[in-house]
Image (tube, rainbow, N blue to C red):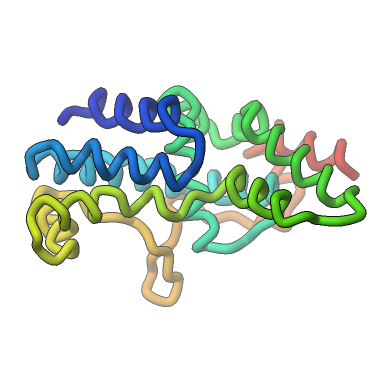
Length: 209
């Protein structure tokens, strides 16, 4: 499986399903019908995509747009960004400031505002919030489930196989052991630096005040 095949699967899974659970199941089923080598290939491309997005500036963009500084949340956000497809992912990975231009982001922010204004949150509202959250934790595990189904082996062996081919994930982020987003560190409280690095997001913040 090459990089085009990886993105084709990601994008087809979004087109052919209508919930996150069915999307994960679709990907697991699709990978389970392929040779083990392609499952490993998929995991390698997934890891490369995650690592490409694991940057200080994208973490800052996530923090300021969604008002969250969670490192776990950032990892799940990167998964969600991958789920949007190649064009959106590459645009934002290359220029984190473009995150605020994604229509999916504006949809999420408006959805949140509508629930803040709502007098009552119904169970179906909570379900929709989860379904359209800008974090997609479960998407990261599809290759492991497929690997276990096909081989009957411990799914951890998939990670070992990918690592043997040079794919080492930058996640999870654990500052205590030096695992942090890559790139030049900067002070997120510095408004001038924010405006220099992420001018679109800085303008969005000012407009929301």
